Structures are given as C-alpha cells and as structure tokens.
Amino acid sequence: MIVNVSEGIDQLIQTMRDDQSEDGSWRYPLESGTFTDAYMIILLRTLERDDEALIRGLQTASLRSRNRTELGSSLRTTIRGM
Image (cartoon, rainbow, N blue to C red; front, side, top):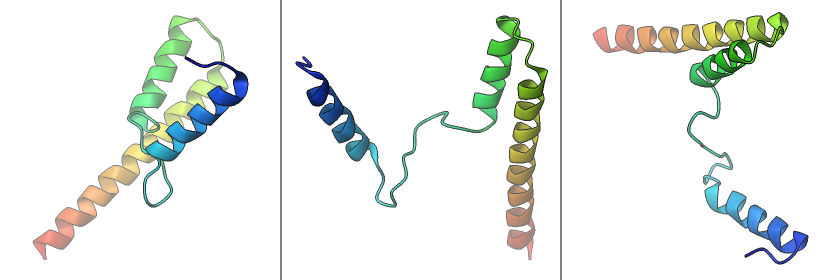
C-alpha cells in the first residue's frame, strides 16, 4: 500500500528500472507500430472525433512502418537467395 507521494514515486522509478533492458530501452507490447495506430484510429472514429489531420498522420505513419518492414523482409529474402 502506498503511504505517501514520495513512496509512490519511488515505486514507479523502481518499476521502470526493473523493466529497462540492458541496452537502456523499454520494450512493452503495442508500444508503437501499426496496431497502436489502428486502435487509435478506431477509437477516434468510435468517439466521432473530427481530427482528420491526426487520423491522416496515423495512417501515413502506419504505411511507412509497414513499407519499412516489407522492404526489410524482401532484402533478407534476396540476400538468403544469393
């Protein structure tokens, strides 16, 4: 049980340190990428938010991410075939 704010902050700091990888990064599921973008677009549409600029930006980012993934996969396949 958290007794005060300082204790809560200390617990959060310890959790972040425990979750941190050796290279200094944090890896959580769905932290980024096409799934997160898609869920955000679905949420915005469901809530009937008219932020088309944000939605278009999310779509563009998802397409770029997907294209990079496909390019990397194609390159690996090409290199293996050599």
